[in-house]
Length: 366
Image (cartoon, rainbow, N blue to C red; front, side, top):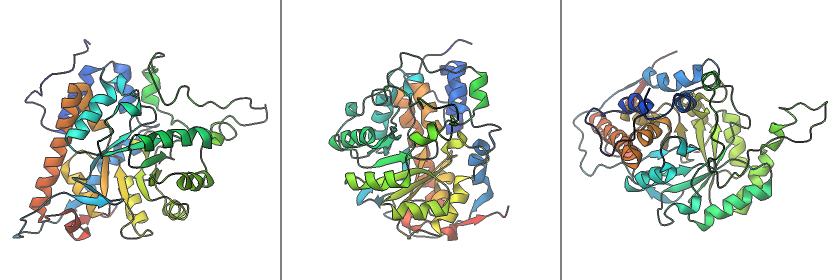
């Protein structure tokens, strides 16, 4: 199949995020598509992440005065224009030559908070320092010193929070990706991770997983230490268990991104919405909770917020936009989802984020 070049304008047939998913495949090699779309093992969690929203129905209220309505909300003392954030995704040069620069431009124009991955192919210093809507995602660098260096660099370039991914200390077993023989190009730049962490010098009696890569991952003590080294709020990404949510608060974590890594790491992991309900019950009402996984329509955003999320993250959908039409495609994906969410809010009788509650949804019994 001939790989199509990215569009310079948005064709009229691209109306939904699902349309972008179908189109994006035409703009990249099959192996890159397999990498983007694959989930772990049988891909049960990958499917559940989207299907979880079908189990929730909206209960709209009518005849409400919605004058002055908006999608603004506050978190960490900062006002955000809307709750649609861009999840950290590495290696974006796989999908478009402008990579993270295109994503960042679109995010800034649409005022969508961007979370830049440690595995960015674009230096974090290349993004507009004056854009107030950007966080940096940290993969622990095997030790405190190297990890802190990236945090301090983020501080210097005005990133507003540090997101530490904690649910993937070891890569998931992704059959679809392996069967496509996906390999990262050897010359792909990774300015903040020169080499991938490898366990070295293991003795024969040591296990390559438990005594190897898992020993390079952070512990709760590392998280508490890092929280003391920076004034930026520390957010953990990949928390699913309420006991871990309580431990996070005890160790200085200021917010959580509830996620199963897009179904890419541990298959049959609990779905983010289910985890959100359980974590919401053990944290203070105003403790920032974000949810990542399966958002494809504005109604999904509404349901997540009704269940207690302060904001949502999208991942694959904006990469579909990036592959299809660069910055223009990413911007159109964000705008499409934002408009769907605004219309959903209006039709449900909610003028503001704070109006959305459990009273507006009905969860089907499993």
